[in-house]
Image 1 (tube, one colour):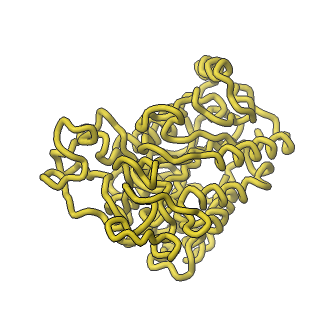
Image 2 (cartoon, helix red, strand yellow):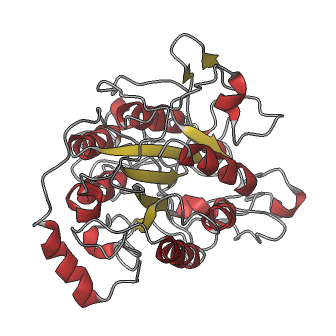
Amino acid sequence: MHLKTVALALGLGLLALACPPAKPGLGDAGGQSDSGGTSGDGGGNPLDAGNGPDGGNGFDGGTTVDAGNNSTDGGLPNVMIVVDRSGSMVKPVTPSLPGCQTGNGACPVCGYTGCAACNPTTCPTRISELQSGLTAFLADAGAIAHFGLIELPKPNAGQCDPSAIADIIVDIGDGGCASPGDDLAAMQASANVIATQVNGIVPLGGTPTAGTLASLVSYCPLLDSSRADFVLLLTDGEPNCNAVNPNDCSMKACECTFYAGVQPQPGICPGPSCPCGVVGGPFCVTGCIDTTAVVTAVHGLGAANVRVLTVGFGLETLPDSGVGTGYAPAALNAMAMAGGMARACPGGTDAECNVGLPATSTSPDTCDVASHLCGRAYYLTLDAPGLVQVLQQISTRL
């Protein structure tokens, strides 16, 4: 429940090697996540994310769905919160608000690549709303789980560098292999530290989701066989930043995650208008969507019986929003399906599938009463109040 010093971080990296064997049981896992962006005055370089059609994309590896509480007799669950701090998180939650308009015809909305930064007071941003919502939830979450915190990309590093165990900001318990006791006061103190750290996040960089998630497979507290273990990912779009992605901007399969402005640019890869540039350019590979590697990373967590909960945050994760590149919902859905925690509606109502969305949403979801699963596998919300509702719903499944 403490902030790491460099020495402790190195020590815990060694402890991870001595973890107990993975738990038997749980289901399949696999994944997908967010997109890039860098900030500066509203986004900096083009590591920027998108949005897309709902539904699975063929990466589901055999989903196991848990609808109820998964805590074991060993105590309250362990949950590592993974926060996307990519540059696209500086974008406005509602670009049409008067406070989000710049008056600049060439760059009419704040927060987008090359545009002025938004003032969260008059134009709430994804990061400001995530900070507010997560802080409100954590205010009394100490009795729910043992929480930890890691961010992506790695703070104070390259804009595509994934975080590793040594970069964990707040440990679950003491970060060691011994199962922590359920000391509710200490757990709440840890949740408070996480809230403080989250409120200090400065968005910058791309979205190395695969590398960050893959690193957690050897994090000792998540290998605790006496209690349920989870990763909770909060992200606003599409994963990228994979320097060894088999696809590049010369291929249609690249699905470039870059674009400028509220609406995506018409450029398609391959071609002279490809937003990821040309072969040999700095973003020809790292700008491509990284779905396959993220799914592989979440499957790796699943093999260690760590389930992944995916929360999409922002307009680009909303199906049919018309914002972004068009790829985010399918990517997020793939991860949620493979993560073993696809959204469920045990009561058989559509309302359970629309928690966190405003009543005016143009993309309502429905419950399949036969399977008790929602049509969209990932959780989705647009603002702080919605995030609190989603996290409260998730907490009933831990």
